[in-house]
Amino acid sequence: MSEVKTISKALVTQPLKTSQPTGATLAAMGFDGTIPLMHGSQGCSAFAKVYLIQHLREPIPLQNTAVDQVAAVMGADDNLVQALYNLANKQHPQCIAVFTTGLTEMQGSDIHRAVKLFQQQYPQFLDIEIVPVATPDFKGSMETGFAKFVDAMVRQCALPQPRAKQANLVNVLCSVATTAADLDLLRRYLDAFDLEPIFLPDLSESVDGHLDQADFSATSTGGTTLEQVRRVSSASMTLVIGESMYSAAKWLKQQFGIPFVCCGLGMGIQATDHLLDGLAHLSGKPVPLWFERERKRLLDAMLDTHFLLSGAKVAIAAEPDLAQGYIQLLQEIGAELPLVVTTAPAKLFQRYLLSNVLVGDLSLVAEQLEHFDVVVGNSHCAQICEPQVPVIRAGFPCYDHFGNMDILQFGYEGARSRLYAFANALLRNHHDEVTPHVSQYYFSAEQVTPNHTFETQSVEAL
Image 1: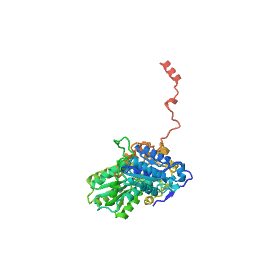
Image 2: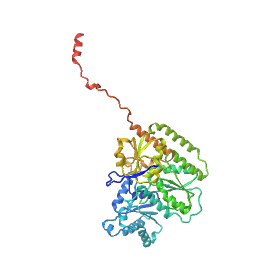
Image 3: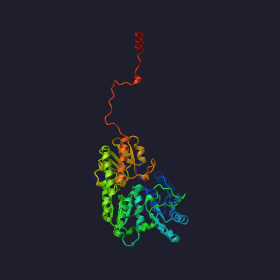
Image 4: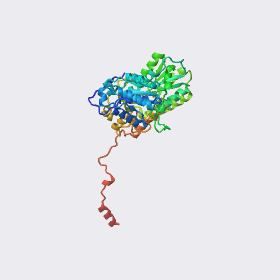
């Protein structure tokens, strides 16, 4: 069992975590026809917008209520009501996701009351689903903000009296740590067992890097529809990808008796085996043969790379869900994990034998950099570590790397891809274990002085 220690500092100069509103904004992009609305100042939304655009290379239709210094003191509920009217009247989206910020939370803004006031004043917009979520900047992180919005969306939109249970319908709660490539592969896994998934949310349909026909869209383009969200109460099982999503899974079980299965982030051979066992049990179908082929390919990759990775010292700087996935994968291959830096003291770390789990910032990695062979982290981490130590890009933000949503981590295929990435990073940064001996009598060709006297004497002798 590992002990998680929180390192408190008066000043954080190399932060690892990002605010909750940023995570909630990303989650809203996974629901079709949704406009994320941040209740705060223009600077609050500008940061989140630039942050996500740099990572995803996709447009983010994030709006804000433009709370200024007057509204911050006198009250900003009118700003929220007016913003809701403007968006509903001009864009008429299927859903508006409303998030608070540190400013409006400190002010004490009641967004639930403001939403009800808007619906009373403008009943013509009652067909638009408005989902308010409290996401203060000074609490939690991007991972918790992402999970909070998904939880609120499920609780508000699920039908309270579902139709008959559908045996092949599966809810899939996806953590912020998953990529579009992960969801595409998971969809293929579920299709192999004739199971119909409802991804909550589905970023593989919205920010996967597709070129849309329209030049501009004020809402998210693609993702899980409201009709699908309403059907979650009819599912026969909930699959949890990332333990930050437990809250929604527990609520679905309590309200509708839907059991849930969690396989972490689905990284590594053991987690994938556990997932396939659960899917086979639910569907009553045997595991298709092509899974066996993919498992053998992963075993071969583990055999090929274990010479480099077994005993390699790897540091991880990531949010809990993502850190758990890489811990599972790296411990299976025999790597050493001398340091894990994360954003919250999650209980999931207690299940692993880890020597040093710290809640803190990236300076904790920089202080011990000479002890690591490779680091798992984002672009901020890479700026600190490279070129001295290679960094495997993971998490948010990765603005110095293209194709972040195409990075495959999930399943047998994702584990194989990540193992090769680690091994190749170590090969490119290889240092000879034995330093070559250089004799004190060594001299280069440039240091040789020609003996012209000897050459003259030799010619005369001839």
